[in-house]
Amino acid sequence: MRGGDSTKRICSRKSHSSLGAAPASELVNIEIEDLPDVVLVEILCRLPCYKYVSKCKRVSKRWCNVMSGPYFLHRFLCLQSDRDQTPIVRTLITDRGEEYLTRLSSSTKPLALLFERLMSVHHLEKEPHVVVTYNDLVLCCNELGFYQRDYYICNPSTIQWVVVPPPPRVYKYTPVGFMCDLPYYNCTKDDQGGSLIQVNAEYRCRIVRLVLPPNKSVRKLKVQIFSSDTGEWITSTISIPSGFICDTVPIERSFTYNGLLYFVGDEPGDQNFLLGLDPFRINNSIIDHFRFIRFDDPEESFVLRYFGEFRGCLHMCDYHHNTCTFFVRKLKEEELCGGAGQLCLEGIKDYSLDLRMFPGYDGLQLLFLDPNNEDVIYLFIGKDVVRYNIRTSDWSTLVENVLYHYQFPIVLPWWPTPVPRLLQHAQPAGTNV
Image (tube, rainbow, N blue to C red; front, side, top):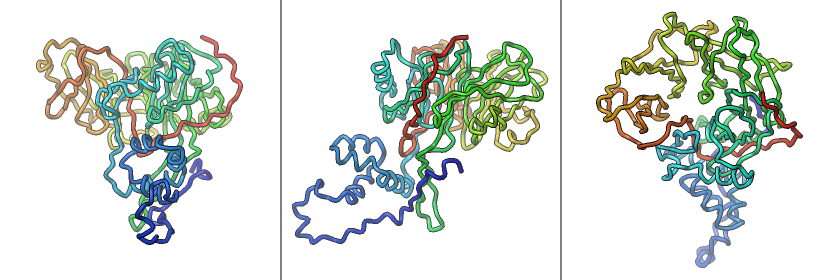
């Protein structure tokens, strides 16, 4: 396993204090600051969630030091796992850092403080944009669409970030992806039902930018990759034997699935394809582990887009305005790893949307699948964000009179992922193409 040398394990049943019991007479006037660190940890690790941990760190320097140590982290995660009650929050944020589901906080702008700090420290003239997410990490950039150059790897929960050096060459349009090789921690159960915590402190992350060819058939695709462990960008290539002509790759829809980073794209004639790659397996500047899969759609009836993931199953969707029909094709790992190079669209399901229930209907755009319920989707209708149940046809308006924005999934684990420590290398200024 990558990063195995830096992992630590702890079993919840072996984390008891060895302190002897003090006489009751000595405990009458004891104050919390008189307690040994190990006892203080046993008290504070029972906080219900990290939000309260973050607040308690501000009580004193000692509390902050105690709660920032590895022992507290392991005890806190063990108890969270043993309780099996604290939910892992899954929600959606926009490219402007807005959240319509209010699962992160009561505010509709949970990234406002992060953006404010970024602007202040780096003297930005405008708020940065979210361009892609991975679990609770967010990749922000000064520009949303064209000529992306200055990136920041951020964690909104801790208001921490690192500045990514600019790529050696900046292109007008480069779809971007972001992923890590390992989660920051894993929780498993042993044979006796105890919690085993594995912390991957030295996890690595990659930023991937596709350099799209200008509407011509190519068999090699250039890819710019930033590595957190080296602090540098490299240019790699993917060899696609069948060749392809890339019409477009939507800039907002890269996603990770079972260890690969995927992009959804179109060839001329609305022929869909999936490109999945492993940016951690590079041999002599060649990405040797990837998948290039076309959707077998002879009638060119669908332009499928990534819509979300639910319980290990990808949801690829399309919407036909003329019939008000919503289409869903679910994909599992065994279909993607078969090596056939084509995916059949058999099994696609359709749902009719009764738009008469939306007063003043004025256009519809698909936003995203609810990460907690595969029957619930989010739509942008007119200028409103709408929650819609495709099975019951129940709907409700979440936000009224807003501009359309891209949506990104974000996950809040029991303990936030620390931003990576980047090696500081001198990087030449990026050049525009």
